[in-house]
Length: 113
Length: 112
Image (cartoon, rainbow over all chains, first blue to last red; front, top):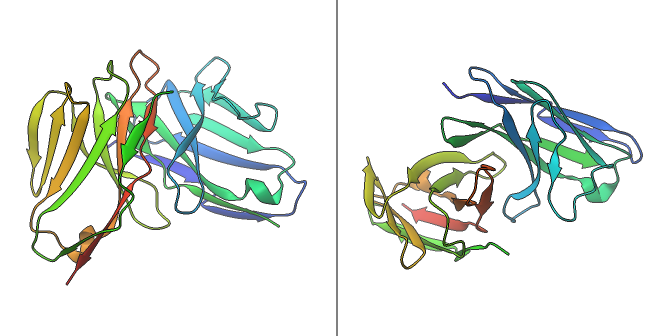
């Protein structure tokens, strides 16, 4: 139980394009999901908290107009990186809150050329 | 600024030894603490959670919590090469947001 999926697992795009990443809780409902970013050899940095039916809460320093989050249902949250640039290249990981814990998706490796 | 501190390592232990990983945190109101294991290129995997002072054992893993000292540790007994990974300490922020603050992680190397 408590499985979280992410799609795609890997994406390469050109600078200036937008990329959408999906996060799904497969066997439980998650009113809250979290989006993290991890640069090489660094820890996870929380970007935003995604709440079903309401606007996401962004951490300080994270541009909400660049990283669009939509929590459309109790099992799906999406992160759209708009007008991606090479400095946005990173490992993006979502987690879903359930049973008092956070369960992580497998991550999405984004490379912006 | 709520913080979680870990020694980044690497911590190197021989196979079969006990590996001891440590973590301190700044938020005195925190009640929930987690240890995650992360292999290179993969997402974190929860291995232990602890909520009360004292020890909690699960197989070869023992988590220890001391809220007065704001200290949480993870012991891995009979370390195996497959335990080589980065171990992330995470502390749930006080309140009801469910947010976790992660330490920078300790890299463990278990040498055969």
